[in-house]
Every structure is written in structure tokens, then in C-alpha cells.
Image (cartoon, rainbow, N blue to C red; front, side, top):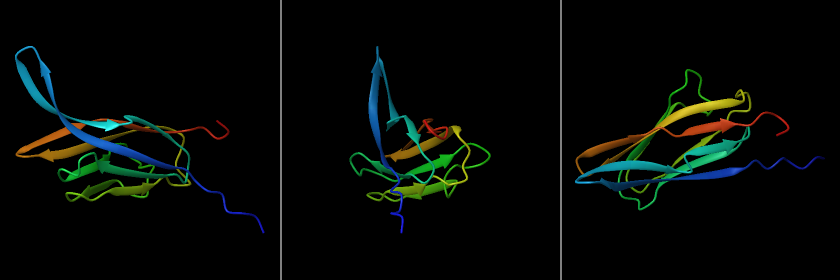
Length: 118
């Protein structure tokens, strides 16, 4: 009997930070990494760096490469998804949004599904 193929696991950390330029300041959300290279069947987990608020992940392409298209997490929780086995190789932009106090901040990272054999 063949051993099952173990798929990769990836973690994306989300952080809300204050950005400053000259005399202005604003909040920005950042995903680390902001470009995630995955294979079919891989597991992706998103979490807040400091567990400091609710957040959401929205796949922006018409066809999601994951087993869902939108997920939200309460404060202190994680979001997990698996790359579909039938997902096509390519770039899939997604959005992350986080609530920080009374502000909602948003960023646009991407998921890249590798071509077979790469």
C-alpha cells in the first residue's frame, strides 16, 4: 500500500500597524507573506499577529482556488482553507480586512498555485 502524500501547510500572519509619512499617519493591514506560493491540496491558515481583532479573507477571483470563497474570524480565532485539487495554476488575488478599534483596514495579497512539476 502506498503512503499518503503529505501536502504542505502555510501560515499567513496578519498585522494592523500605524504607518507614518511626513505629518500624516494612517492604519494599514499587512499579510506576511503577501504572495503565497502553494500546491494543490495545501493547507493555508490565516491568523492575526497579536490576536487583536476580528478579520476576514475574501477570494476576489470568479473561481476560488480554495474550498471556500469568503471566511470571517472572531477575535483570537484563525481561518483555515485547503487549496482544491482541481484548482488551476495561476495567480489568485484575495483581500484581507481587519477591524482595529473603530476602523476597518484592507489589503490585497495573492495566492499563486504552481504549475505541475515546478
